[in-house]
Length: 219
Image 1: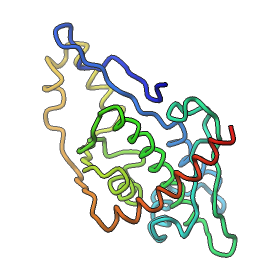
Image 2: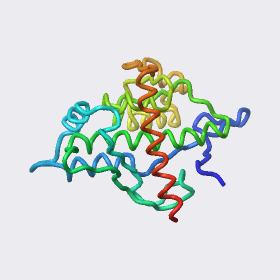
Image 3: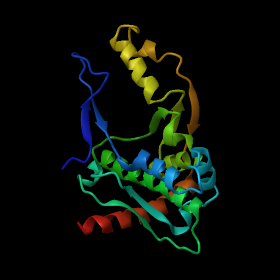
C-alpha cells in the first residue's frame, strides 16, 4: 500500500519520461503557524523569536516529544487520522522554548519517517536541495534535519514562488530551457551531518517513532 504520491515531473519529455515522488506531511507549516499565533504573550511571536527560544533547549527538548499530525489524514500514515499530540510534558520542567523545540523536531521526525519509506522503495537521499525559505530559515530545524535524515543540505536563494514564476517563464517561452531559467541561482548554505549530533537525534527519533507506532496501533 503506497504512502507516497507519484506525479508527472516538470522535466518530463516525450522522449524521456520522468516521474517524481512526493512525500507530504500535512502538519508541517500549519503547526509552526499555529504555535506562533497561540503560544505567545500578547502579540504573535515572530518566527525569528521562536527559533531563538528553541535554540536555547537541548536536542530532545528535555523529554518533550510531539506528533505533528494535526491537519487531517496523512498519506505516510496510510491516510489515517491520529491528530497532533504532546508526550512527556512536565509542568515543572518544560517551557515555551521546549514546546517550540519539540515541535520543530517533531516535524523533522515525521519527514524522517517519510524518508525511510522512500528508502524502502530504493530512493536514496545523499544531497537534499531546497530554497532558503520557510522552515529551513530555522537553524534548529536545519540541524535536526541534516542529522536526522543523514544527508547533506544545500539551500539556494529561491523559494516556491520564485520557482513557480521561473517554471511559468519556461512554459511561456521567456526562457528556452530550465537550465537557462535557473542560471545564476546561488548556493547560500551548505550543511552536513556530524556523528555526535546524528547519534543524539537518532536516539530521540527512535523514542518518537515508538510513540507514533503506539498511537497507530490504537486505530
